[in-house]
Length: 197
Image (cartoon, rainbow, N blue to C red):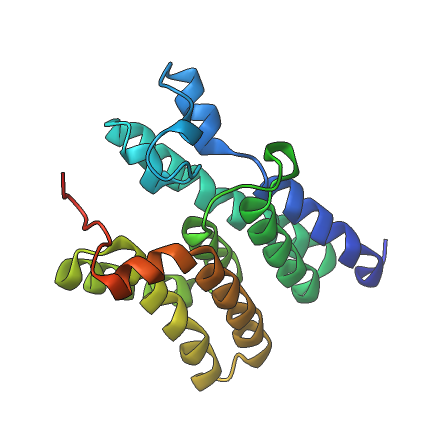
């Protein structure tokens, strides 16, 4: 199969992998209440943490990251760089809007990191360092994600990775959209801080 023929398949592959709701699966296997009835109702690692199960939250984070990485690596192996980027977009959209959950998924932070690991790992390190630095100074998880995702496309553009920067700019816009309620709470001063009871 030619690399061009792989492009639509890469997007579908990415979407299907990205749409696997690991947070929901892991919490159900562990016997916790339905994740969608807890906290924000989100299926990501941050909401899993609200169950009080730190191990489950860490496992969700890792699995959500790796599904993005796997999509990129598989598509890239068979279809080349363009297929890898389409798979990255598919995985991100699959996580945000999984068909299995009526298109109500996570907010995309872990998958963003995961696709960066597969596409250009130094950008993943930049994202994580920015997230940690912002989290340590502000104790806002949402703000940390917003800052890291905002700077990452600029970092990629600055170092000449223009196509990847454009892709990450799209991912960042989607991530900001998914955090729109968090942004409102940040502006109002009512957003919950990391570790707050």
